[in-house]
Length: 297
Ligand code: UTP
Image (tube, rainbow, N blue to C red; front, top):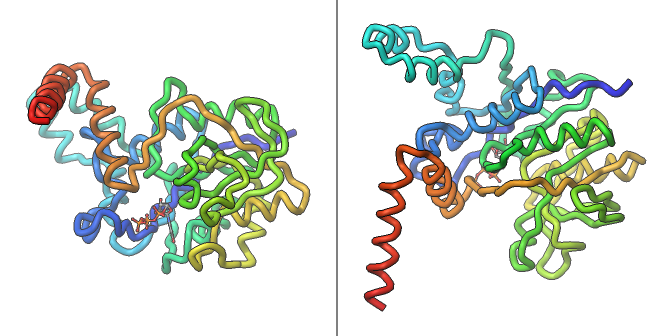
């Protein structure tokens, strides 16, 4: 019988240089979209997909991220005293049970593949998910849940895939497609950050994966790839080379690259417009802004 998918790795050990100086002291993953840190969106998505064990790969300076998941008794007491029940419920919903969450360290930022490898002993011999919290996906059914449902049918390795414009392909891992079945594509290769014009398709890998333990074995080799980093896509492709299937999954939803400033700002506006208490005021502001700019043209 196929093993159930119950573990997810959250690699959050990157330096976050694109958000300096903020990331000098604030981990990128607890920066907020409206009022929820990026990592909360990632946890909620994982839970919806049936994940029970949450494994964080952290690094120096990420203490605030660990504290975020702890209970906050003093704060809870104050809210209870003031009768702020709604806020109290929101606060409690962010607590993680003891033992549900595990932290391991990547002591040197050697790349995403290396970060995932750092969690190998906590994974053992079963399939696992990887979620990059800085890829935020707005979707009716959370992206990892869509993938987990497809994975129950296919097994193998699965990566979230999305069409990107030609001039953006060299920023992504790109899929070489064997057969295209719409939502699902089978692949015959993957290239991390191809040189301009050398991408095998326009289908890019983004930050959601369901992987087999074979990928961890391939990462044991610690082979460096594009940018001198140990790349996760190279290890997935090596697993395919040794006979495993690698599927691309075209998810339903909109992905925001919250690792970049422009993507983060777009996500902030999109998520704020979804909130009833903010929508009208923000919309009026954007409307005025656009009209003033148009009038000045
Ligand atoms: P990024 O490429 O966005 O790098 O990593 P970064 O360090 O977070 O940000 P910039 O580019 O300096 O602004 C993609 C994901 O992989 C993790 C990051 O934390 C992020 O979730 N990562 C990357 C690691 O955990 N370890 C690494 O060595 C590299």
